[in-house]
Image (tube, rainbow, N blue to C red; front, side):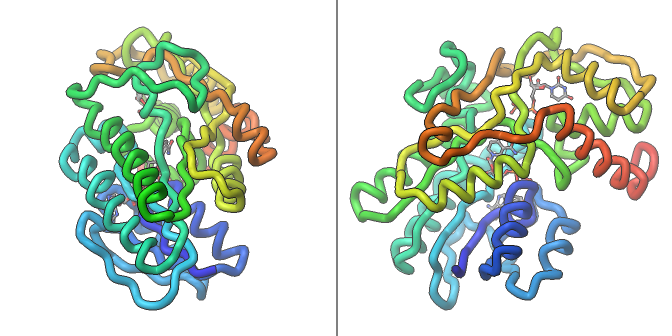
Length: 316
Ligand code: NAD
Ligand code: UDP
């Protein structure tokens, strides 16, 4: 297959690109490097089937040659990052999604949208099945991401219904693993880097809010399986293993054997209180479930961050 993948320099995009390249497919990676990392691209450039196009997908995109898939993974994903890039985040999910759907339509390609569990907002139903419509503050600071993704899902299904574009939509729940950006501010990277540097672990609020953490290899396996079935509606992918944030901080301290203290900082506005995927649909449709327990995934992630912290130096 020849696949166009946006967000190829990012955490998930680079893992997905690597998986497809290893299977022998050709990948045209597109990224504007706004939140991506050069080190992810270096890894991909070792594969002869990889080409890189530096472009902002908010602008219309022209690519030569045939395409079997347009995979749209470009978007800031970490809350501190998207809060700093509010308009760009809305546009990459609105205009970006539109241009990429147009590209898929022109090329006769299938389209794949990386959506998010954030479409459920601060959920009042727990765990969250795909049938839940969510509880999103449409004008709060997080709305640029949540509503951007909700619009992207609506647009994707509109192209499917109006133009017959074959589409897939994945709702990704918090995913972590090697390849994460040590600086992007998400909880797993923050806690591990803080613990390795002997700095305080910053728990926002009282740490009773929960998240469910999926190891990246499991997520990519689910994405790959979703590409193989003909199902246009959203599918949750995530690991139902649910942790309170304070519990996660203690676990990271234990796994890194870090003497760091835990400190409490203000809770960001509209921070969801709980989140856990209902993965019954993914089990039935894809025969998929996560295989890597959180403890094991965190150990592998700690090993990756040890290297990164050594490269960056203390406090770098
Ligand atoms: P990331 O920030 O590591 O990667 C996103 C990539 O998109 C970056 O390389 C960035 O430079 C690129 N990008 C952003 N705007 C762009 C634009 N206008 N044009 C071209 N490139 C652009 O984030 P990630 O964790 O890899 O997330 C990838 C996708 O998965 C995103 O769509 C995100 O919303 C979704 N997602 C991720 C998670 C998670 O836990 N990692 C959870 C839910 C959804
Ligand atoms: N969080 C935290 N300390 C940090 C970073 C995040 O306590 O240093 C909390 C954050 O408030 C949220 C949870 O951890 O409740 C997950 O945050 P993340 O930014 O990873 O992703 P989210 O699920 O909010 O998009």
